[in-house]
Image (cartoon, rainbow, N blue to C red; front, side, top):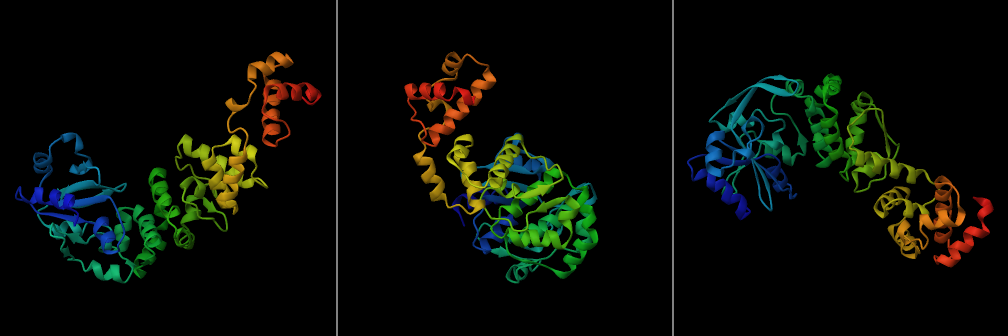
Length: 362
């Protein structure tokens, strides 16, 4: 166990409380997968956790204490039971002194394996067996767990995809029966889970399950027949038609639209690289099956890579031509294209000459 993690657990124990790592970190450690997010469960109450670590600003929803270091992000939470869910949120939270009661409120067995400060695994729900069987299985009745929180439908599919696991049969049936409840989820949460599915190299499995259980239709999301995997979430969304507002940021929308535009082009030229940042072009090129080395080669040969490198200013064009700004912009664009095609050298005298000789075209 990492010495820093051990120190955090020991600090809680030295104050007279239990402390265990629970959930994704333990699961991923057993699967030899790296993660920086650590959930710690303890019988220390929020006030006790505050007295141990200080700074009440770090106390989040439901008494969860967040601790960030250079290496890890810790969420420290008091053992609890949850009752009467409303819109995914438990109406009643009761702190408990019992680890098992806390584990039984969690979603899937593979997320309820514990590790103590000595690195020993505690597995009261026999979840290690499900991990070995590569099985996504709910803790308790799957229908009840999905009704409590329909996001568990997407989480189940996400884990099946990213871990390349299978869904337990009763969970499959519950997803089919309760699939309509997916409509009640916020677009923010839906996008969060879909992002994690799409950015996984095993995204095809996730999309297959989403399609099989009619989730894509319910969400009005329609991927292309065959997506090309890229390690860029906007590049993945650029290959998908969605009629649902998934709350993309302005930056995300811009990037997605640029990549879509580039994908639709018959070829990618130096002018396309000039228009958009090299990264967006590289993502689109990969989707189109164009090797990076070709885009890099085009980029390196470009005589200019941005407007300010053109050896004639916009104001100079206006003075030479004495025409409207709109027409000057067309001339500037024509000059850029001509320079990129090596039809004219990027020298002021030659650019001026080019403008005069082609003035009839503008």
